[in-house]
Image (cartoon, rainbow over all chains, first blue to last red; front, side, top):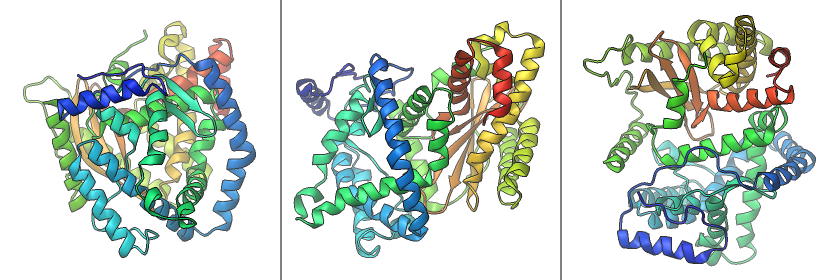
Length: 256
Length: 206
């Protein structure tokens, strides 16, 4: 079990470099265990940020997303979302390579080629129809594969739930997509612009679920934290048959 | 070894997605174990549950009628008193038998409304049962939700071996038991630990 930089803080570039180096030396790191439990030493600050995020959602994101969802027909919204997903694929491929997951790198490369050509620039998603389903990844996952622990839970201003590791990952991902270097202005703006539209689409599409977490929970901060961490760990475990010992213990409790 | 097994599972899952073949009943029964139910039975149960959920969401009935249908489905196939106990957690110890019963009943309605709403988002989609595996004293039955215009995602039902009913549902790794334990804990905190007040709140929530 490689567990480097478990308490890594954003900006501690040295420990990241060490983690990278350590992993390269080990060549193929065994898939690290995902974390369990909740590590939230910054809860007081996080809760303040959560409140302001909730206000942003209530006053801006949610109404704009609902207006977008109700005025733009579904096929167009799906097209925008496909387009944004397709633009992020080259970045996924870079991460796949950094994760030594060459099968995923090839899968995503072929998916990008198919969707960019036959899929008319990525607006359509013929890849999925022929078995080249989405295998999204990010630099946070790359760090996980390299053995970096998730660190403390963080709620990021306007971006929402994250962890120290995933916050670093988000920052790195901005620079990791080859398209942002190849494509010139003004086309370059297509990346963030479609990303924002896709995010509005997601907010609309998962509106019920998100509203339920943000506005119907007794403690929306605790609920959002749990949902994020559980889902993220599930993604990172990468297969359907993970052993969630934490949960298995819960199933056998009695409380008599 | 763990890596290898995970990797193999990944490969199998991908092959499953690629071929689109349903590997129904690919059960991993434990030879010589003293389990009351078999993985096959757990799989059959969830196949029935999934088919009833699909019937309810595509019935075209009103939301209120669907909530009633979901509540009957939970009462029939889920171990609601056990779920209620797990969700209440350590506070279950100080609850009287009457409070436990009232909480379980209120929770059943709450669960039907809250998760019924989520299931309604599956309208037009379908759930497919994949495989079942035995873990400790229960079975995990994996299903895949196929929704239009969205990548397929996993919903796992956890079936207790003691009585053959399901005690948890995990949507993309998010366990109902864990999520509700947090939620019920917060609701109880807000009522300063008053279980009767919690039960009253629960009847209106969800």
